[in-house]
Image (spheres, rainbow, N blue to C red):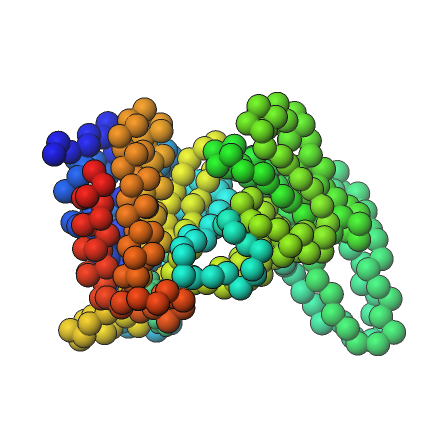
Length: 402
Ligand code: NAP
Ligand code: MG
C-alpha cells in the first residue's frame, strides 16, 4: 500500500511520562505505517523545557501560528515535587497556559461515546462539547476580608483622573468583598472562537450567563456575543442550518440535562470549570475526553483532556505492565490530521482520520479495552488488554479498513 502524502507539516508537541510513551507507540503502530508523516517536532517534555528555559514552548506556539494545526501530548505542569525530580532551574509555567495565551484561544472539550459505556444521564445520546472562556472573572480576582464598621466602594480612576464610585456595602458586621474584571476584547475572541467552532462542527451553540442578576457584567457578555453573531455570523449560521441560542445559566443547566446532546455549550470561566468536570464524569471517563484549542482566527491545537498519567508511568518505569487508555491521544492525532487534510485539500488524509477513529471505537465495542474502561463497560464479552496490545488491536482493525 502506498503511504498517504502530506503537504504541510503538523506541529508536533511531544510531552511527558506515560503519555510520552503512548505518543511514540501511536506513531509507530497507527501512523507511520500508513502515512508519510510530516511534522515539525517540538519536545515539550519537561527535561527539554528546562534545558531551553521554556523557549521551546514559545517556539512551538509560534510554529502553530505559522502552520495552523498542532497536536500536543500531555505535559507536566511543575509543582514543588517536580523541582528535585527533574532538577529544574525554575518552576516553569503550564505549557497549556502559555500556548493558550499566545494563540488567544478557547478550549473545546468533547467526550468520545462508545457502546457499553453508558452516560449517567439516560437521555444523552450524542456528545456535549464544552467551551470554557479562559480569561478573567473570579480567576483574576482581588479579595478582602472586611471588618464591621467599614464601607466598601467600587472606585475607578479614569484616564483623565476623574473617579467613578459605587457603594458595595456598608458593613454593620464582619464580611468579605471581591473585585473581578473581564475585557471586551477577550469576550469577543471567545465569542468568535465559539462561532467558528460551531460552523466547523456544524453544531448549534448555546451560551448562558446570569444577566438578569448581573445587569452590567454578565449582560456585557450577552451583548458582545449577540453583536458579533448578528454582524459576522448570522448568515453563515443560517446557510449551515445551525443555531445560536442564548439563555440564562440555570435554564441552560436544566435544558442540558433534558437534552439528547449534540451541541456546543459555551460557558463563562467559572461555569466552564464546574460544568466540564460534570460533563466529563457524567459521560463516563476523563480518558475519553478530547480537547482542542481554537484561536479566533482559526488556528487549531489538538490534545487529550487528561494529564500525563503519572501513576501508570512509575509502574512502567519499574517494568510492570500498564493498561493506559490511549483513546483521547489517538483522537488528538486524528483531529489534527483531519484538519490538515481539510486545509490542504487531501481527502485521503481526512478519510484516514475517520477510519482511525472508527477502528478505535470498533476495538472497544468489540470488547477489547484498557483497565479503566473495563471497570465501566457493561459489555458481556469484555477483555482487558495492556497499553501496547490495545494499540495493536486498533492497528489491525485499521489495516483491514484501508
Ligand atoms: P492525570 O494524568 O489525568 O491522571 C489522573 C488519574 O486519572 C490517573 O492516575 C488515572 O487513574 C486516571 N487516568 C487519567 N488518564 C488516564 C488514561 N489515559 N488511562 C487510564 N487512566 C487515566 O492527572 P494527574 O495524575 O493529576 O496529573 C499528572 C500530570 O499531568 C501532572 O504533572 C499535571 O501537571 C499534568 N497534567 C497535564 C495536562 C495537560 O497537559 N493537558 C492536563 C492535566 C494534568 P488511576 O491511577 O486510578 O488508574
Ligand atoms: Mg476544574
